Length: 254
Image: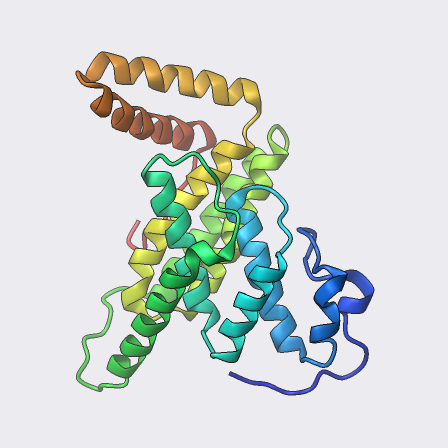
């Protein structure tokens, strides 16, 4: 990880941290005043991702900031941070837990697990005898980005909040180029859950109520037990949401 002094005044003192999502509290901007632009961009990237996945603006708390700074000092790659955070959001959604994740601390174990995983895969990738992927990963990711951008453009006139949510996921797909091939499928699976969650949260109340009413009726007609109805409702809701917004599947071979 590159380090070094940033030239000129620290941008934190002028405008805060986030790109439209929030800013670092003045109480700890001074601690970063002499640090470099790479570190600042690391913080911005994580804060923007966290806000995208939550679906609302988010400002890092002092506790989150110190955890994030520790990740930087420990040279935890952004790819591991992105993948770990996305996975935690996806698993929480798939379990049907309604309470939002409000702190990076919920993601710390997943981040460290992915950091170890990425390090192990990078060692394996250096092996000349290692099996190479059968598809062109760069081309596949570029195709996913293009499909998502097209979906965002279609939603922009009538559902601008949904369009912005999709664009936030595009930025995370772009960042997936950093991941070793073996980690991509797992990351994209979690990212697809995040895409559905952020799009649902960005729908207008009328659209969301109508979609969930239809999904609930379909689930009631096809499942016998309350537990089965709950699972079926989520599956029907995601299917209807994907159809309503014409969302692509985030699959390398799709």
